[in-house]
Length: 326
Image (cartoon, rainbow, N blue to C red; front, side):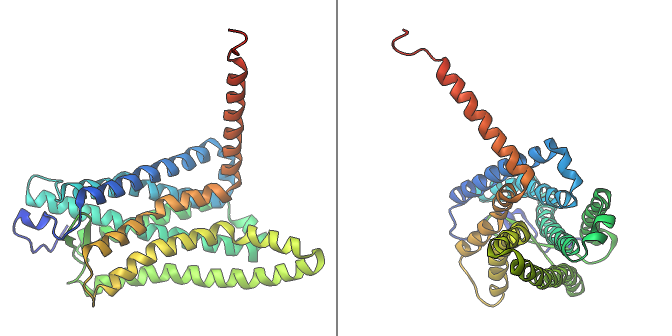
């Protein structure tokens, strides 16, 4: 892979600025641990409830869980260790450190791209389900959804392998903990990346507007027949999980990218960038919680577990000897 590095010694991997590295590392560690637990619980329930994979949407949502786990198990731990050590310590030589730094940055961008791509697929799936239900039932089989999901992962992976094939070059940036890849000297490559993301975003916007217009008309017609209670019930079911996840990703990603864009013309203190990273990474906690709230298979499993724990506690309470018995 052809890298374009300007650093000449290991000093380029020493943290700069006034950020308290150990404190920020502790915050990142909490996000990683909580995010891992939340996502592994949702994934475990999904795998246990194998019948849920008959729903194409389950495969898409599981894909988002896997991208969250990639973040919690690879990117966040590397960032946490580097932030706490106030130095990028992954490698004993400059060449190894720059390679691991770029690897970390690639993982970060890969997660962003695959998340946006899967959200676009979910938006299209939702639109097709509502607008063309008969066609959806015939076409969107679980194996079709699985092929689409695998294809998205492979396409995004190929995009980030392009520099090894001679298309574009990677640069890197390190200041206080996280490692980033940059493309300052590769305008064509930057435009290609931006165009790819814009395609996914346009799909989300177009299909969401189309779904909203169609659903609004459908709900209005149904509410005229069945009353306002049906209107509110259907509205919640149709807009619940996807709208909530889109809002969560929009806030988490939006804050970080807004800081990044504004920083092109304004210099912020490192604390602002750290806040952006914290909000960005919070998505791996928020999105599995949203899934566990809206997905019926997850809700039913959690209720069953709750009832089981309650029953066992009751049995334990009744089995304990009372003071009069002793």
